[in-house]
Length: 246
Image 1 (tube, rainbow, N blue to C red):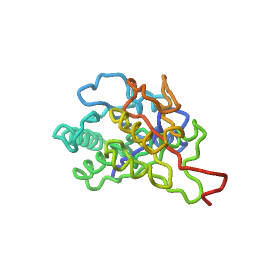
Image 2 (image 1 turned 180 degrees about the horizontal axis):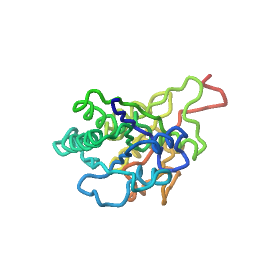
Image 3 (image 1 turned 90 degrees about the vertical axis):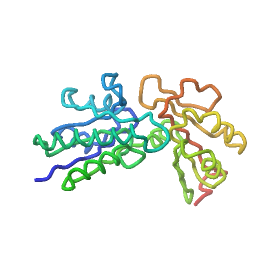
């Protein structure tokens, strides 16, 4: 029987946001992999690992180092990390593991490292079956915690990473729908300036460290020295009255 590698979405940080299926797949897996920052394999548990530990014993988890802090596309360090991680997964398969899980924050099909890992594993072992279990995304959690509907009626929803550049953000803000930005971090001043320019600042909400100690949810402001890489900016569509977009 060929092995199955399943990317499991574990949500933005709150262990209670895992689906029943996610918990089952994690608990039934022969091995559960969790991402960790390359060059810091002995560091404290990351967000995915911390979440999974609420459902799976720590001694069943295995860390896979990734160059999560690299910028500038597919660097040599990033590619090497993907290859090394894939080889570690294949070694587990060769040792007899048939059910392997990779825990990823949010959803495995939304800006996730899992896609790169799966491609790399399949390149080494084409027979490996790849599956995913969806997870709650940071934008859903922020919408729920802030009481702001993501979309209504005919409104579109634009999700983009701040690393894609300010032009895409500006174009999305000028449109008729809700805009969500991930990974604001170093680009926060630019995003803030564009929100002001287009008159969207009063309605915007920012989520810092969702589901973790030190979590902050509130208005967007200039003070962001502690803004984490995984921050979420939500700018709801302009809504004049109830049902106006139906």
